[in-house]
Image (cartoon, rainbow, N blue to C red; front, side, top):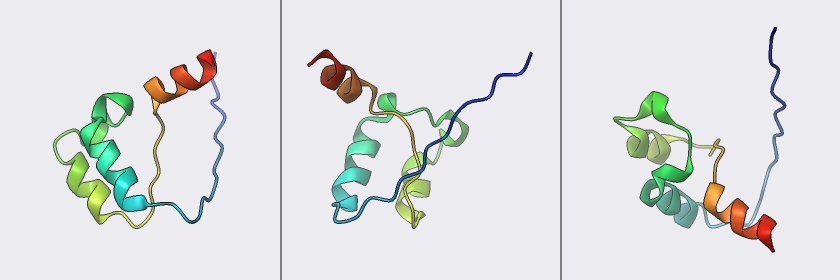
Amino acid sequence: MHRYYSTTNIKVGNEDTVKLREYMVNNWDQFDAEEIANDKADVLERSKRISTWGFYDLWNVATAK
């Protein structure tokens, strides 16, 4: 049996990507990025686009409201 996961891509403008990257670096437990565990911050800093999933704590707070 194969599992197929749905992917949604969005483009967001007028965001402070510096703060977003800073949040991600300071909250790695909120993101599934084990494949680049040793240099995640460097990869994130060098990346032109931010591609991620996570924000689990924020999502749980939002859905509880």
